[in-house]
Every structure is written in C-alpha cells, then in structure tokens.
Length: 434
Image 1 (cartoon, rainbow, N blue to C red):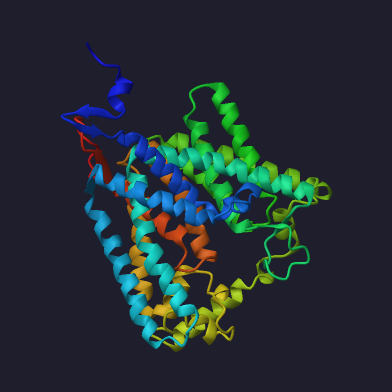
Image 2 (image 1 turned 30 degrees about the horizontal axis):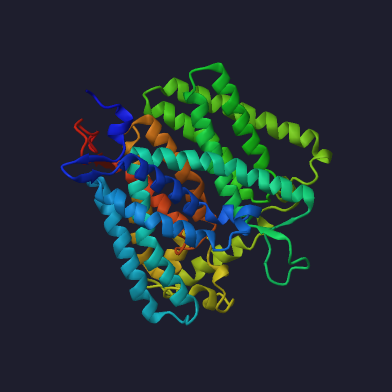
C-alpha cells in the first residue's frame, strides 16, 4: 500500500529515526527572517509597538535556530564569483577593527564595532541561506507582500486617528503617547512589497490576477506618499520600473522588458501630472509635501557628504578611524550624524583600504547579481532584486556600516551564486555555474 504524499513529507519513521519536514522548517526560517529584516517597520504599527518584548529580539531568537537547521539540512554549492565578495566582507570587518586603533571616538566606536561584528556576519549568512533555498525564499517574499500592506494600512489609520507621529526624536515629544513611525524603514518595506507585487503582475497568466496585482502596486504607491520618506518613494518607483524589466530580460525577452519600462514610465508620468494638477487636494501626503516644499538643499546630507570628502582627503590614506567622523566633523559622539553614504563612510573612516574593501564587497555583490541574472531562474532573480534594490539605495543616502539590513541584502544578492540542495533530494540541483 502506498502512503499519501503529504504523509511522506511530514515526520516519518525510517529505521527508528524521525525524518523532519525540512520544507516546513525552511518556510518558517524565511518567514521569521522577513519579520527580523522588517522589524523596524513592523514596530511602527500599533500591534508591533504593543508587544511585550522587542520585535527585533523576538524575530532574531526565532530566526537563529531555524537558520541553523536550514544550514544543516541542505547541501550548499557556491559559484566561484561568490568567493571574492565574501572574502572582501571579512577583510572589511577586520580592517574596521584595526582602524579603530587610531579613532578619536570612545562612545561611537564600541557601539559601531559591536553592530558590525555581531550583526554583520550572521545577517550576511542569513541572506545567503534564505535567498538560496527555494522554500525559504518563497516564504520570505510572501511575508514581505503581507508586511507592505500591513505597514501602509497602520500608518494611514494612525494618521487618520491622530495617533502617530512621523519621524522625529522619541524623547521630548510634545505628545509622548503617540506612536512614532520610522518612515525610512516603513518606506523600505512598502517599496520591497511593491517591487514583488510588480513581479507578480507580469507573471500572472490571467486577467483577474493582473488586475489584482496592478491594484496592489497602485495601493503601495499611494501608501508611499503618506510617511514622508522621499527615499522610500524613489525606491518604490525604481523597483516597479526596473525589477519586472529585469525579470523579462533574465528570461530572454528584451522586447517585453523594454515594453514594461515604457508602460511603467508612462504610468508614473501620468500619476505625477495628476498629482500636480490636483496639488491643492494632496494635503496630508507628507512625502509629496517634502518633495515640493524642500529640496536636497534643505537636507543635512550634502554637508555631511562634503565633510566626509574633506576629512578623507586630509587623513589619506588611512582615514579617521572607525567611528571618528562625527567628532572630526564637529558633532561630537553623535552616531546619527554619520556620512549617510556607505562608500564615503568607508573612505572617511577606513581610508583607501576601507573604500577598496567596501567596493570589492558590495560592488562584487551587485556585479554577481547582474552576471547571474541570465543564468539563474528569472523568478528567483526578480524576487532577489526586488528585496535588494530599496536597501541598496538606502546605503547610498542613509544608514551606516552597522546597519543589519544592508548586510542581509548583500547576502541576498550573493545568494544568486549559491544552490541549496535538500539532503534527501534525488533530483539533480540547479548548477551555480548556470
């Protein structure tokens, strides 16, 4: 008598040993990793803010053991192109420790090194494992598609009820009972969800599915106008324009890629024209207000970028030392006033060696993604790109090298050169060499 397939997939007895349903474990690992990756955005929702424990800590505690099981129940094959960025990342971590020897910082330095050394390696490894395993990747993408609307609806409801405040310091608020929304993180979650939704739109074989996913993308675009994060809206537009085109190009359909770019660009231009024509009715769309009322000159970023370049030139070739930028720029031990650009941060604090290692690490990740785009499965390439692009843009205008999301995104990019094979699988796995 043949047993049903679902019983074979569940825990079964074989010689007295219990066989674990590794696909379910992998899905759980992907779901918990998504919660960890977007924990900052989820904490901007009422439910996330009311949790008795910090959501980041809870998601991390769930992800680590599941990740360990995922690593143990798969056989991993790496493409040779994965080696150089991985080695560069390891040497970058080491160099930042060495550069701390001549840093003037006593407060920012230990905080920053702790984040880089304790969060960077495991998040990089998690990104590689989640991105390489099919079940984990599907679960991660599915949870991200749910997180986007959840964050968007929470912000919209909170603004309508007057129960949230967008950004700003949590201490000293005139109304401390209001929920503070991290609009940068919320914007990244919405942008990632929109990019994935756009991929589902072009993949859908039926009109009903296309209409649903088109509505989903439009809803995410409208939601991105609410929090006030300009980068989030830019990332959403870039993801919706480029990722589906990459999906078509990866599948060997360059005309379809160009067609999508043209159609999506026309839709974006039409949306901008409509908003400008009805500008009087857009009150409350905080992101749009920040675009129209203040340009880049109103931001502190240009001054920080100039200061980073100036100090990089003065301290060539070794840099200020890890964590030393804020003191040199006259801001004291205020970590939040970092250069707001990873390359400039690596150059200013790590000197020429720091910049070279950063370029080899993160530039190598981008290069691997582009080179593998025509060899890996198109659906896999598109989903990885949708999750990586918003975080990559954030690394250019925000966050510092201790940000865990950036290291996870680098791992996702590198995962396109990794193949995960279930130990008991009998079929031949996809080759990392294409």
